[in-house]
Every structure is written in C-alpha cells, then in structure tokens.
Image (cartoon, rainbow, N blue to C red):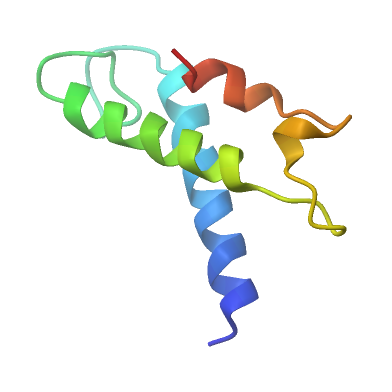
Length: 81
C-alpha cells in the first residue's frame, strides 16, 4: 500500500481518537469515548503523545515544519505540557 495512504490514515485515526477523548459523555463506552479514569488513562496519554509527535513533525508542501510556519496547528496546543 502507498505510504501516503498509511500516513493519512494514521493522521485521521489520531485526530478521531483525540476528538473522542475531548467529546466524551460518560463513564461507559470504549476507552476513547469514556470519561477519564484509571482504566483508560494510559491509552489516552499514549494518544496525546502520538498527537504531539505527529504535529511536531508535520510539514507543509515546502518542507517547513508546521509549528514554525504561519499555519500553526491548534490541536498541538492540547498536548504540549
């Protein structure tokens, strides 16, 4: 499979998981759709780490790192400590 397809799929999956974590409604459901608890804190921390890694290495078409360009990414602000 084309590497561009895999990278895009990973980007979408990470952002989908972030949305689920930030949009959770209660204690039930899958790890990303449940309220933060001892049961799912590890997987949620890993998701934020993956998002941080993704957004700190993301480049525009010219090869400029997004966080150093005029097009900064809002989602990165959620995971930077």
